[in-house]
Figure 1 (cartoon, rainbow, N blue to C red):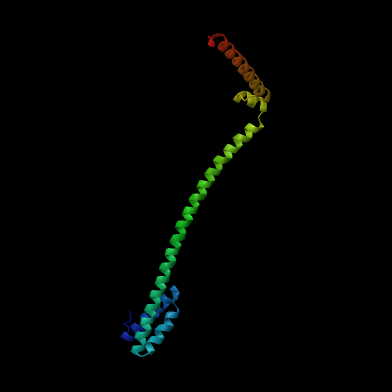
Figure 2: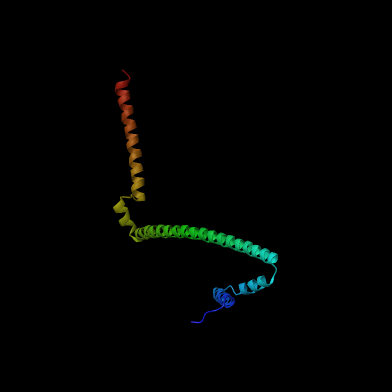
Length: 151
């Protein structure tokens, strides 16, 4: 294995670093670093500070996007659970509707007999009988009052 000089080692390390940056999508970094190497030290420090500031802003923006995505995910879960509840309620209502439709298709006379629902004639006959019995009871009460109450 051949031993490289210090300058050659630095150049090789820089090339490897640039290769990794290109691979990760930071190809623009090579231009920035080359420009920094040629600039005076004060300018370099200012650009480094600016780069730090830009990275901090980018990280803040990423954190904001992450928080927003998490909030949207919570909202999505809540909406999904509401949809599931609505679907289960819908199923229950559909079953109830089906039962009512089945009852509606049945013979009306058969339903009246099962639930003992009186017909219109039976209702009026009951009212007439009640009226006649009321009149008779009133006459009997008047007769009893007249016969025994006046003494």
